Image (tube, rainbow, N blue to C red; front, side):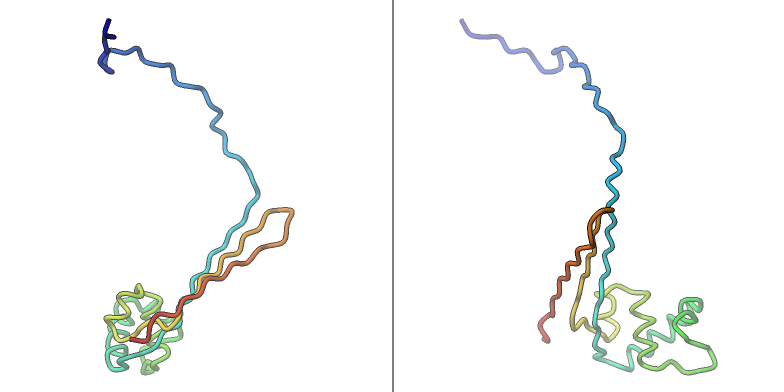
Length: 125
């Protein structure tokens, strides 16, 4: 005799399982730092974008040592753009990433910190 199947919408609702929902305090500290080494490929373009960025965000520019009365150096211009833009945007502004480093530090309350570093150097092309 064939077994008759019941449509899922007609099945009784199963009671929800009670599970404790309190967070676990593990005492874990993790810090992740990303470092990009940049190379300027077009200094005129970098300086032009940085001048615009300094006018649009004078507070960030001041934190990096820029004053309106002093012309931007190439290093200050690159630092300002790097602080405000993603690596893909920087490529369009006359810079490229020469090396990328991610440093992760993890530690528990009772153990010494463990440091993991991942480095990649993109193709120079």
